[in-house]
Length: 202
Image (cartoon, rainbow, N blue to C red; front, top):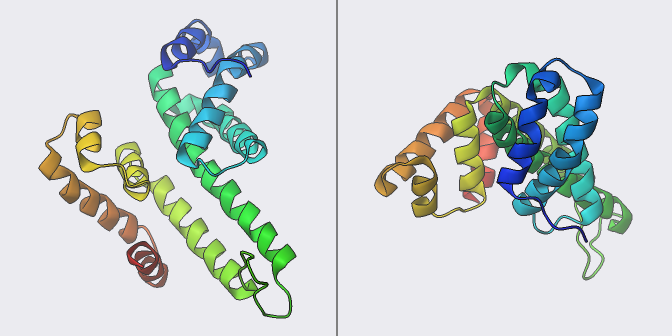
């Protein structure tokens, strides 16, 4: 297996190509893909360690494809990597849920659970899909800081570590998370906001 590229080496690979990437030059994207795809794949695996290598690659490819369409809104290589890290994590969650739904369809028979097998009823699959799509839409409306903070919250990153990353006081992190949750909730229809809140607190 090839050695994983460090953050600094990925950044070094992007900087000479930056102007051409912003201009949409295909050759530049081909070259950048050599460092962006492994970076996105590693980000997907970091966000969802249980994700198989195949699904991590799909998540990474989807995130890089979205990056190509979004590049004009991004102001620097550093911001690009931060955006890609977050988006690859979101796509990893998508792929994990998709793989679970496929497993559910295979293992579910006559409305009964097969012993030792994961399953979801068709209604549960539909409800979970609705919640997930609504939550993803809400994240897309948040600031980058809020989205990153909520992802850390859902990944159960310790408050001390979050505070260190952002240069905040540790005792302020809980309040910042609550404010980000409130803004996310405000971005949703009331009924879906309640469902998502119930899922988080369950």
